[in-house]
Length: 293
Image (cartoon, rainbow, N blue to C red; front, side):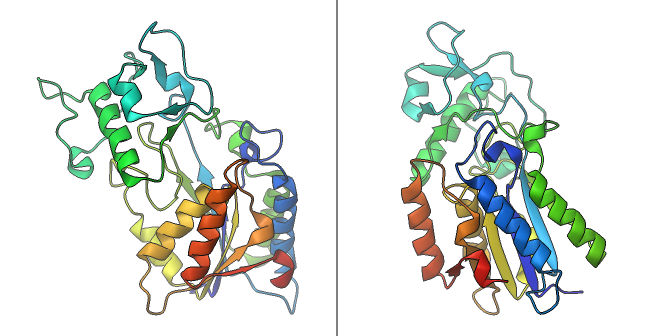
């Protein structure tokens, strides 16, 4: 059955809630409201949620945006503190460098997707240092994102990776009553690129980190997409931008953002405000959760 209304919940995971490694203040209140929307949708004479898509930020410890990936170019011991910005110039100046003992999967980079051959050494092998130079250059060329070292978060297999309890309980109720399953979509497992958006990585390296056409096409079938989750300044922002920028304008779904169900990373409120302006300009509607139910 084609869903009329899809609830898109972005990264409602423990590590993005108070007590988590990258907790957003007041995210617990957001989660309770999200859970309330799901539970109320099961009652008569309220909005009917036909599909729930839940994205999951999913990282390994030695990710390019985690401290363990990097060491000081001066002493080869010191790691960058959380929230350090590593620039392209920093790498040119040897301020930071990737750990030389990192073991990379052969599937981490497809040069045909990356579209660069200057990440190879003289023998034609992948050169991690050259890649990091290219990666930071591309991030900065886009003008929106610089490489930020985040506290280790959403590590696969840890409690921080799990959906926050109250939303998980609401999922159980919805699944039991509707006979449907939650569509979980993982992002961020490739250690060599950041993936704020569930639709694609900041620098696509493989088919898996390129635009997710399958997800895009499935969302296109919805009449309405209701959006919530964390954080408004980053993963909500980038996911929805990629959705709106890649959906055809004709017969595109209606987009609704639940403003009281998502918060920005502290000090990044300007990014959230800019996104909300973009969202409205693209025809999206911003409301509170009480207006849905």
